[in-house]
Length: 213
Image 1: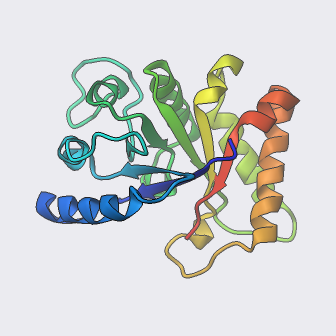
Image 2: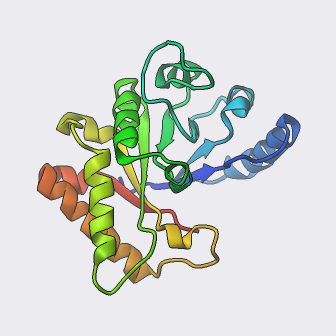
Image 3: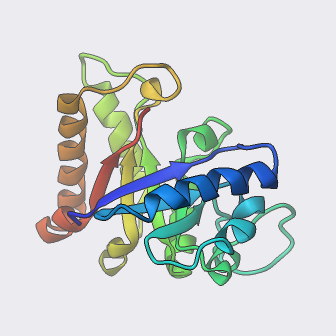
């Protein structure tokens, strides 16, 4: 857990596969010379297979920006199942990003996605974060609801597949960012919630990272 991890969420960028390959190839040439950092690329899913073919090493991993909440097959137009992602060789899935939540994704839906991704053997990057900070501490209650709701029913032995990304919404795309002290405070709070729900050892083993700009 001490190895540094950087996850790049490309969102809906770039506009073509040729540009995506150019960006990835440029990074790959520089990255291969570095050590001590694990990198995960989460490009648009439509580019995933082509980019994965450009790399055969073991220092860069791939993931998706979102996942469907059922691990299997069925009549779900436009969706991508965890099973499909795993079959490509990708190992990570972002779940519950604030931009997905803004489109109506609830904690209940996020919870189903977390379980489906874990069941498929993917590493889950669970995004949580308050809309704003306030002196009354309401933002802590908001964060607690997100975490408890998103992890409801997740078994203790599956938490080794979980990474929590603390991404305060007020610091995404706004030019603002949490101070180191604020980020550390929230990480401590999140770890405390995990300890209360499971136990101390589990709380210490779950990776918690900052991801707000």
